Length: 289
Ligand code: LIP
Image (tube, rainbow, N blue to C red; front, side):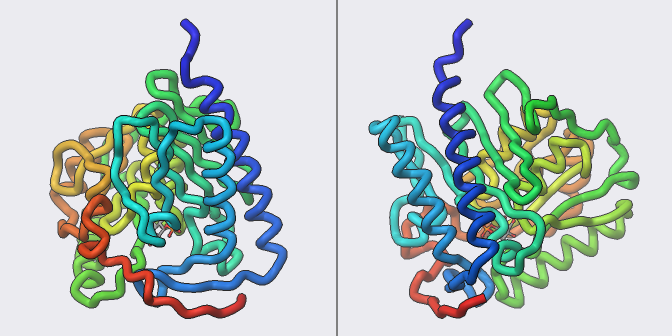
């Protein structure tokens, strides 16, 4: 049966690849860095340029579609899903890596529920998933790891960009608890989307984080589930992509062990009113790297 979203997904892949070219070019030049919700929540002109490139390209082809973009939301636009087809965009997931010319930089596009695209532009790996039709990396099918014993697992996580000491304490309590399960190791790619693609690829058994945003994880969530993985809230139950809390694992067994291990807390939701979100776009400083 013909796939009504095939041409839309093809456009997403093409524009992700174009975004990757812009990012790779920018890596060769100076990058003006500003900050958002904290002194370590970085954003560059390339993040903003790539997001506008993607949005303009989609608007021309699909004028009724709606958008949730990381930099548009930071500039005050709403972060609300509607009944219209909605593109959830993170132009550069791994901005800190990008600023420091670290290896992992991805662009993620997701048309809510129907498909997910994550392009790791430095290693030229295009991760894709179409709901009900599998997950792929450069056309090769993806399958999560079959390791169900968390004591034999590698777990990915990130420290986020909130430097409130109470939040940092909770993050380190969770990290300590996970390490002492014990697990074989803990890794972090510096990109939620990339960590989740590593779960989908079977390279790590699970990823968890509290503090991510919907644009960091929406596309990769479909890639994980289409690779046979499981998504769960950190306190168990169904993941809520607007809650800023996620576990992506190869199995329910591993996910449930992490639920019992993680110290849960609830950041302000992505779909909260702008005044209730912790992001404060007035926290801007600029420096060239
Ligand atoms: C990043 C996420 C990462 C998180 C960082 C940051 P960005 O996204 O991928 O998981 O720990 O704080 O939010 O800002 O590079 O798009």
